Length: 429
Image (cartoon, rainbow, N blue to C red; front, side):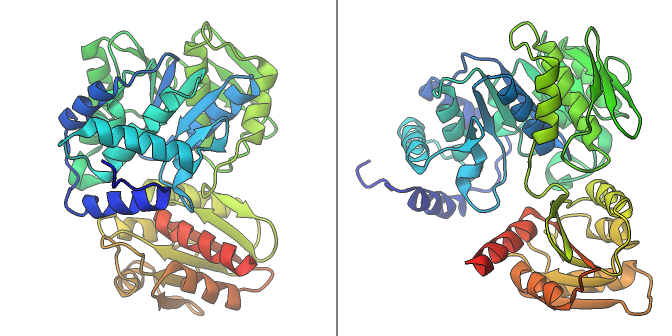
């Protein structure tokens, strides 16, 4: 044990190297065994959030509102853009290297000869850290699916499924019904189960009913109404009137906000939250890379849309933005995504494609993307397609060509947005 890493970068490098041998192992037996040895449990209410899109936004809204109400809030959110520490937040601040190293040491000691993937190991470590941080409430974002995700070793007090769409078909199945069943795996008997997808798969409803979860459905148990200026939430027994729209921009954010408010309604006896805290919390919430519009010109938008459902929402948001002469797209994707569907959803607004290969063995190459753009997007004058070895180079090209009245939209995989964030950061120094 004495030769364990002593710094966070060294720990992450070790886990990455181990991870090379451990494929994604669907199944919770190993994680549950290590959880027992760690004696991992939460003494405060926990909220778990799954969904194809909208998970991160819903988590961030819950964190923002609950912090405004004076609660100590722990959040596990992923993936990270620049620092691994972004995944563990205590009262809005990233966990320190020291606390993460201590948590990694604890998991390593408890693991014995049980092999864990990178995601399982880090999930256990961050949950251990949050369980010991004296929190009033902990919010846990599910990574992939739900039923077999490492986060699902916790029995949450409230479970939320934000949206169900086609993604990760290799693991979750290729229909909304199959994927809905996987996401519904986070629901628990006798506990609140919220689904903010306006058209939930029947499989999700059936599973919730079969296990005796208390299912809250959008349109049946909670809903919203609004005009251009403000909106209202109506739940089973609680109304929230004259709310400002969430600061996270985009068409689906109102559904995510409803899910967050339904969770708060379900927990109102243990975590009461006042009207003003809800208003302020929704207006001040921040989340990098979710239709994030950067200040300055040309207009730059960062969005981690990487499936057709998210790309359609991004396309709609671009359409609502007002006039821009040309739109440059910096785009990179994993090859197992529905790339044609994403390009088709975005083709209405994109004039110039700057396509990037991502730093991952799972990346689609920029030239593969270029071939798909040519097939999917109808020919038009003045359209260009260029390929680059990495997102930073693609972004540099877009910046060098875009005028003040243009806009650059950086989208696709987290690695696309992270690559551009890193390039921007280094160009500022």
